[in-house]
Image 1 (cartoon, one colour):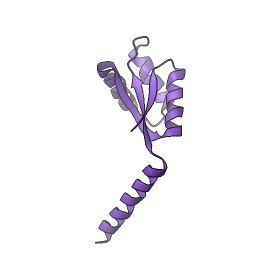
Image 2 (tube, one colour; image 1 turned 30 degrees about the horizontal axis):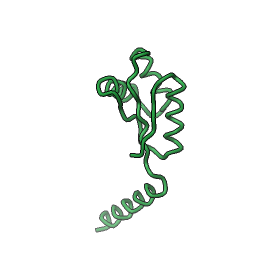
Image 3 (cartoon, rainbow, N blue to C red; image 1 turned 45 degrees about the vertical axis):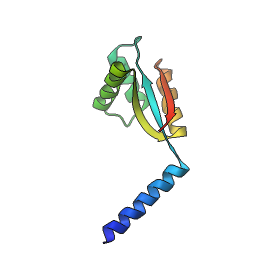
Image 4 (cartoon, rainbow, N blue to C red; image 1 turned 135 degrees about the horizontal axis):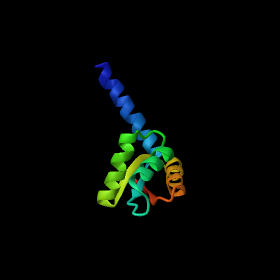
Length: 97
């Protein structure tokens, strides 16, 4: 029974955390001006948590669908990642998740 109580506590903590710091998605827009390797490298330099495979998957999703979610995080961090991506000349926006 203890794992259930702990799970409930963790879920409550997550709800509280989301209420205090609501999640925002950083959206990468398709880029016709830069080659794919450049976009993958810009993603990795802008969001250091991304592996090369994750960055490649995000780039391909944006290429195929027009946009892709890069990361979901609190607003201030999302704005930082958006600005970093833009500094590489990439289209990026922030939306409430």
